[in-house]
Length: 455
Image 1 (cartoon, rainbow, N blue to C red):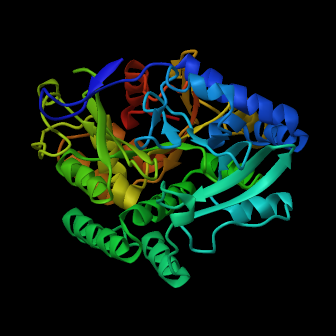
Image 2 (cartoon, rainbow, N blue to C red):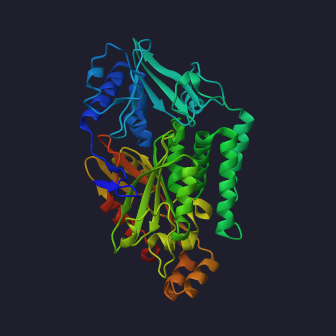
Image 3 (cartoon, rainbow, N blue to C red):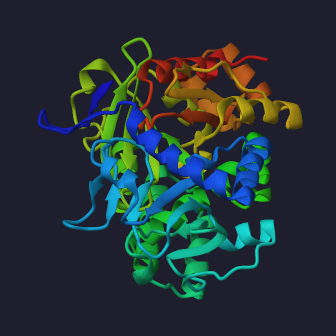
């Protein structure tokens, strides 16, 4: 599927395709490591059995010695050197780990975790932690045998050389994190709320740098969303028992009114995000989205907004959208719950899983059911957990009824039963596929329209 970024006809296109050659190379290394290190294989088994997470989805970097024959296949599989003549490679064709050539490590796989200390504590591993507290990069080797090893790494807005990672003061980190976690989300107007948030982002950037601020901001966002979603709390506890946290997050989905959409995208750019593909679900659905990605932290946002056909070729991520006299699925959600970036919080977090395992485990262990999959391809599978129903404030319902945007029956239902607010999304990506299923996303957007939710 080819989808264009917003902007001029010369805008970049993103034609994401499955990459079987690249996946084969990654799995060849992972399979070797797991075959040669029994404790790593045991951990891989626990990841799937206890959390529905796949070992390969957590791989951050693969380190190979210069004589490794697999290096000759890098180019054909899509990896490119990060610098001229460099020894570190990235694959821009899909979601794949970096590959590093290092003579001193043998074959080594680095796994992403949110906190090295949490992982070591969860597994009672006695090892040396590389990088002091407050460092933007920390690591520890946890499994090793005969020139093959597994390390864990945590990154906080840093993709450069590990030995050059900045060390931020613990007090500054704590104060910045606290300010973002406790930020006020309700004001006398949404304009004032956005101004307050923009100022908070600027203070965070000044304290810990743009990329560090992005890392802390989304940690706070996940925490706020998690408090409002039982499926998230259940799954996070399962992943915390294994010490990985939300290291498997794929993208964060925000819903916005048309009035504030350009400001939402502008705030992401303030944090360093760049525009990726955009979506349009069609005239009947009346919905569109702008995907944005942070090149350093890897955080992806999927930003939903009511949209009409004539607006598809405009730069709707930057140009203000005019008001309309009707609300689509996204607009009504915001009118009932508030802006995702403010009072409501994220609509959902999508994480990479073993699709069948996590679905089965959540239902059998906690009674968390999963909706019908809206994507079921060999390279991409997606499904929401059943929605978390939130109460709706009376003044919001009264305003919608007064403006003729909902019926009296709908108003009564929202006041009595509330409305669906958030989900956890179960995602399985194969062959490094980095894109989305536009038709499937459109169908689930329509299916989750608050007007269709009844008990």
